[in-house]
Image 1 (tube, rainbow, N blue to C red):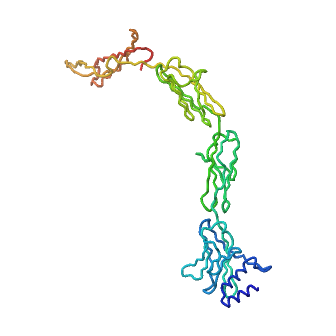
Image 2 (tube, helix red, strand yellow):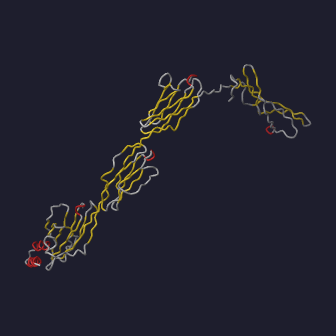
Image 3 (cartoon, rainbow, N blue to C red):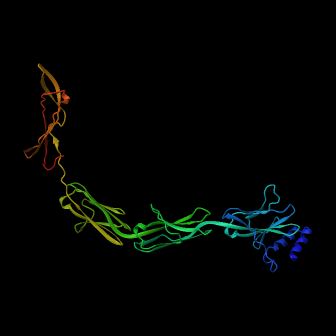
Length: 403
């Protein structure tokens, strides 16, 4: 009560600054007499996002009343006198509204969170307005597991921690075409990891303030080689043979080639080119002694795999040539008797061939199939059309196959 009397006396005498300071003491915990409290039932909440500008609105009763701002136990403004050394705070008022006495805080942070008091001093008793500034903070991941490398079958544990207000929800997903999601939580545990579970894992921290914050962890899974493709093609003498071997492995495998039990090395018409998961063996100018089984061996620090494939000879068809022309027309002259003799000249289309295959003066004839067709010549009824078959002679050096 002594403080309130002093405030009134100061107001009457026109000492507004003294009155304001004394009235502010009424709201500082250290100045309250024992058993006296402030009514906080009508606290107004102001929500702002970290980094934004917060505006705590307060209005004076009239043109002669004065105001002051407190933050917890610190005086920020007394009237227009700034007591705070923080350059971010200022008093603002609307254009044409002399009664507004609002507190503006630029680039608010979590340290600004809390209760503020706007004390309005009149000739009577001071009237406080209580405001609670809530600073919401976007999610921020501040710790996540480093990239790791493990062997297939191992257990893996990843951790991701984040801050924010409200507290963010953390979730994990495996970045694959299927984008498998895991249960929410800071920890991601994988028991007996397989090669299919290798790759990037994304941690996402989300609250209702901003877009989620995300970071990734790369998990590398080592496994022994497995040959999944082995190809070769038959090749004739003097030709070039290609044998291909593909293997999946982490780390990438090294390749070796064997013919029988003998390791193959580069040189003398043989070339070997190996990439991360593939090896190609090239055999130039194929000879009889190079036919047989070839073995590809892929190995890394976790194991070895091998696969074999035969390289077999093929007999290529010899070149054939036609002795006679395979096409054309043969001019024929024929007679149709209709009570008088007329001579009609026409062309007769070749309708069949007879193939003659020869080997060392031995002749094999393939019977021809002739399909008479009188329509092109305008013949009807019982007309007789002599149809000739042309002989196509193919000279072959071998009787094995015909193309």
